[in-house]
Length: 149
Image (cartoon, rainbow, N blue to C red; front, top):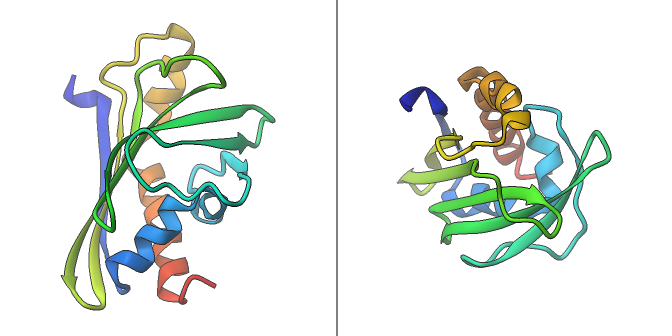
């Protein structure tokens, strides 16, 4: 099952909280999505803890309801996406931030589809590689290092 967990890490020249704010605000996520899958999210959905949900519109026009299952401010955030009003089918997106010093953070982005059993989603899950995760981390780095502008 270890082939069902992929990740990418790098150091970003920005404080952990500034990076985390870009991740925890769904409206900012399309700016750094390396899969070019996210279209938009409504404002005022900033994640503040486990149990929160946020809605994301993807480029195919579908709406995903994301259930936050891990949260530690400026350190860890993870969610399980689902169709609106349905239980998550078993895959998880996680971001872990490890401060190196006041201006540098090691960021790890992980996609875990260990518990995914929906046959219709398996091909897409297999296509989510560490390179695609790295694209998100790189875009997030560029945004964070420019001051989030």
